[in-house]
Image 1 (tube, rainbow, N blue to C red):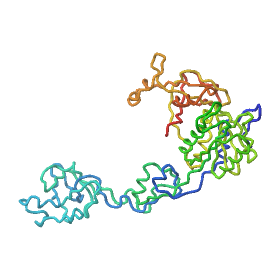
Image 2 (cartoon, rainbow, N blue to C red):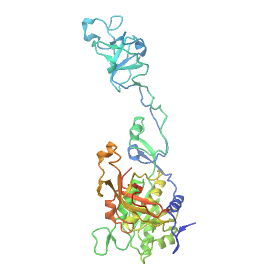
Image 3 (cartoon, rainbow, N blue to C red):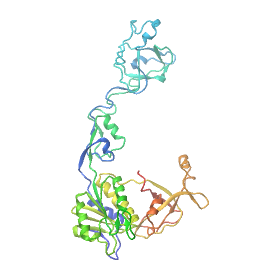
Image 4 (tube, rainbow, N blue to C red):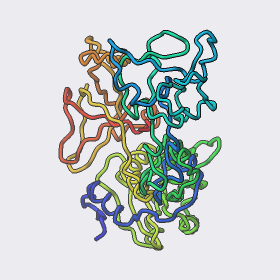
Length: 449
């Protein structure tokens, strides 16, 4: 059943429209092979498996001395164990011997510890563990003394100070599961296990078509309006995981609108702005209805209530109002969840903060109302001040109690209001506004989570 409001009828609630859109949007299954650094933010289409173990050798994890753990088993502060330092026995000819047989201990550049368990080999963090050793005594656990030997007062266990080969991942083991959204730190892991390219889900292509008979791209003459909605939507869609094709504004002539819509049906998703009112030039619903199925006309949302949704030749089309504030509100509410679903991502995450409302916010029951607000701190004299970052860092709850100041009503909000706003307060359709001093949640749509 189509969620459409008839003349004089109530528009469908936001949740119902979101569900209708979700029913028509299927996550993409197209994939592509990318350099791992270029796939950040994309869901993995296939698991990443290790081509080699990590670490791929027994790796020293602290500066110190490689030893056989058994050689330190009897060490205690009263009777410490002393071990010869391999390769340094000739530094003091007067001392005479290196190993028990009186000969210097062969080192082979630190790669081999002799069978003689009385030897310690100097090693640095990250170096291969010398053959024959199974532990490392950290430098700060060794008593200062002779340059030719170390004194160990406490036993070390086998494996101490060592990251064994394959202790993080064995060769062939799954490192990152399919479906994981690649994080900025993941390419380092992939490269470490020998994977420089990954199979990722393609970004959905989204066509953005602004419509309006007086929209221009350059300097406007009287009566003309600079097209701005498309730029806002392009930035948001890219953040949500889409790949944007942003078109020049299209005139409201039905033939021009039809051609513009048909041109972008090659995209995975289509968004139009403008032409959603009831004026003589508001024709986008008629055009979409002639090409496909208009499933939503209007939504119980203010501002942005003239938004809609259609499906044309199996392509979902979100219709947004041309008013910049209404367009933004409807895009965050309806378009964001749709694009992230199509891209195989979780719904957009928005940073929030709670605060005390400085004045009443009115709203109509049955309509979700969204209001731009400023967030500050009550200075105690009726004035709102910016919150001091040092108070936040110190955890001073009294000092950082947020005051939420409505900047405009949905009917009076402008682009200038949006620029001044710290966030948005949503009033559920089930209530008649919010009263001063109530605690409300402010959503910051502009900040990248």
